[in-house]
Image (spheres, rainbow, N blue to C red):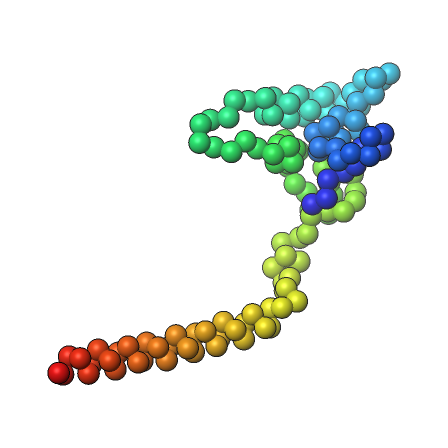
Amino acid sequence: MKQPVDPKTQQEAGMIALYHKTHFSDKKGWVSPKAENNYERMVELQNQPIPEGSNPLTKEEIFYKVLGIRHGYKRGLGHGEAPPSCKRVARYEHPDMDQLRARAEEAESQLEELRGWKEAAQETQATH
């Protein structure tokens, strides 16, 4: 998913920073107590120590862990480009898929032929 861009710096803004910018104002404060709580949970998860041998959660993973995922809608950000639905992902086919299938079938055929030769060679060896 393409990261949102900070309009002031034109740099990629992390999901958590963008949430803060869209839900907090220096003049008015948080848009709601729930928004403040959500942001605090995100910061808390971000600052948790990382257990040895594990990978830290990305900012995007933290964002979705706190807010959840609702298809067709970016929680905390409103309507917009949503992640592809499970159905769209399931029926997606790479442009080279037919060529790849043909190559896989050819490889299977060659493998079966080699197995046949191997069995014949083993039988011949066993009889001698």
